[in-house]
Length: 122
Image 1 (cartoon, one colour):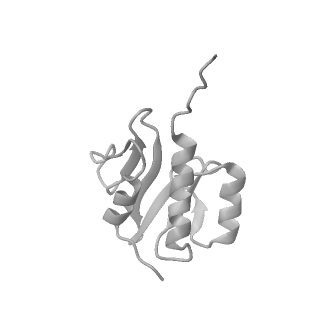
Image 2 (tube, helix red, strand yellow; image 1 turned 120 degrees about the horizontal axis):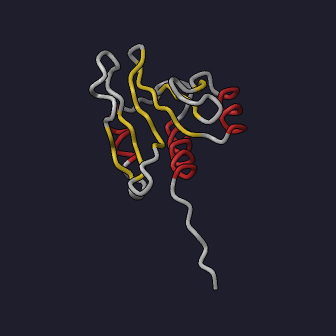
Image 3 (cartoon, helix red, strand yellow; image 1 turned 90 degrees about the horizontal axis):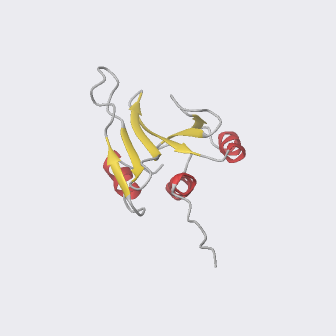
């Protein structure tokens, strides 16, 4: 079983272009600390990091069919906590999801929220 700490997860998310960390929920009493990883151009979030029941978790955006598939394959991938359950999954770190698979899921989430590039008309 591999183990990643919160700061390592944040640092990996920061490797994506224009990514930054945000703490929008700090003022809510008892909510715990949520780190929201966003894209700097459109401010959309692609990873929401928190601790639940003593375990590090991350909510990641998914294509709906992909989200359902990942939930069937991994016990530690569930419908997202506090998010649209069709488009978001929660991944519990340190379980049956490998580090490489987690990094792929984060990259996929980032790709789904990044601004679309417009094709120039000739």
